[in-house]
Length: 519
Image (cartoon, rainbow, N blue to C red; front, side):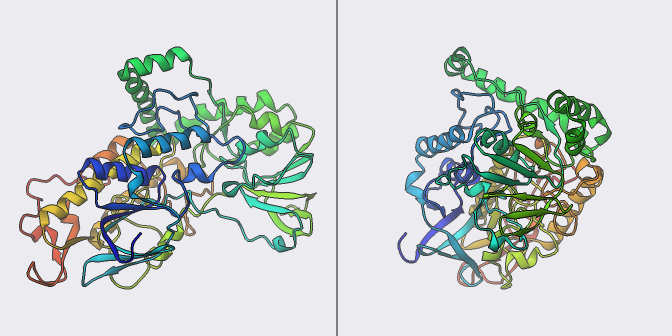
């Protein structure tokens, strides 16, 4: 980028959210934008997570953009390499490469109250933008716990999202820390080649069968020749998951049948009652993420695998000590311990209108208006923000809803005219979040009896959306200017730092219907 470059929109990140934003901007006729990417290629989490066995747990035809259907998915559940190739394809088809700025990590961004724009410092220079769309995603920065003695470990240590492909695991004693979505794919993939595999399990997951198969050539031919069949397949997958939401959000007791199915899945593969007891969860299914695998349980029964039903407490040289006192020797440690979800690192780098970082504002828990905007951070929005996650469906549906909101946000700025900005009103943010948290109280994520990565340090669920994707799309279809204050730059076009949008001429709120979180 050139020094002091200015753009209308700066998008941060080139995963599904960032690329989706770029496509939507072009479809809205906006070409004055850049996509800032800290790595050297697109893909986001599907670029970073390249561990053995990495695949998606959402069906392929639902885990793709509605505006970029892919009739040629090779499997019903696609592997990492196919999803990353799809994102490269989207980048090329929609002509996004001229907008990409690789190796451009955002170091700091600060709101200029006088000029009503964002100053953005990157690893490759400085630029300014009228609007920032943060699409860094919650699964981008690995979380490695601070284990006492880890610095004394003489072997190899890495996180699942930063896999060291140069390190040969064959014949090694390997410790896998964690039993989340990545771990249950890694364990069966590496078990046949390692000498010894020790799985440190703090909490056992519920695991359902993975109904995966190759998509036949006839199916793929049909989808290419008759595109509506691809849409129909996607619609069916969406509809099934939409009907399941009630059990997660309003009637968790109905999940008992699903628990019995998961129990049978385990019993078929694990005959040893001692091991089965270790692997049996003591919380309601769905409270933590439900995992899909046909190979995880069989791998755990192999002679070279040990399951330690306790978290890793400390490390003494090459000896790993669990919280229950048991020990294991290891040549390599692989952390499958998730990401910084409720404390996203990008928040430390965003400085708002009052000189405070977003992390400081969110110290008591993440809050935003409709999962997109935060009070005190004008013309800044996030894709996959607080309380936008899903427990049983495709995040692409949420992303596309948020892109609708982004597009209308930019339209409203055009209607306002001149140099203007929108700042979410604190009372609107509180009102939205109060309603979300009220709905959260009866969900399985709050009543299921577990501690999950959905919860922040205070035990508040700031991650999941407690409703259907249809409700979320309705709530983010358009911007309600009554929830914002208009900021005007000093000069001929108007003065005065803040004006309630509901009292601004041509605000566009006449006749507008307000959609609340309780819809």
